[in-house]
Amino acid sequence: MSRVSVPCHVKGTVALQVGDVRTSQGRPGVLVIDVTFPSVAPFELQEIMFKNYYTAFLSIRVRQHTSTHTPPKWVTCLRDYCLMPDPHSEEGAQEYISLFKHQMLCDMAKVLELRLILRQPSPLWVSFTVEELQIYQQGPKSPSMTFPKWLSHPVPCEQPAPLIEGLPDPSRVSSEVQQMWALTEMIRASHTSTRIGRFDVDGCYDLNLLSYT
Image (tube, rainbow, N blue to C red; front, side, top):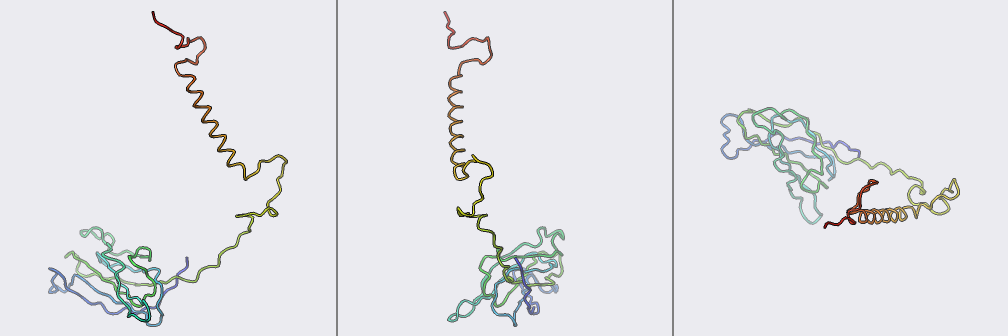
């Protein structure tokens, strides 16, 4: 599936303070980054790609156009997505991340604005953000490839003639194979029941004929 880059404007980062995170050290616990699309009509978001920089969790909200009679509304489509699995190591701290629309919690159609909410609760990392943000929408669909009709549903006049006389009719092969399989199972079960209590080696006695006095 093709994709097309969407021109966007990334606003300045806004720092928030939540819980017991202190801003006196010059480091907030939550950052908010708003992304607008001034030159693009409401579009269907296909992919978000960026480079992480010590962000532990990411939430995404989108402002969507619903209808002409109601104002656009904000919807949370991703909540606390983990970017750093271990807060005591740098795993995932500076990796490129791609998030696709099937990973989101809501429909990504008619997007007007995007909001990234970054969270880093660990005091080990002084600063965090996301870099090289890229937004993609679905590109034009490629024309479907047409196949000859005889590959899927052949009509009688298009069916190839049999190369050798006496070849089985393809429409009857499946049912005849099933009948043969059922008949084989019946014969096998019948043959097994007739051999109970009997040795197959020549010279051995039939246990049904033995009697004790």
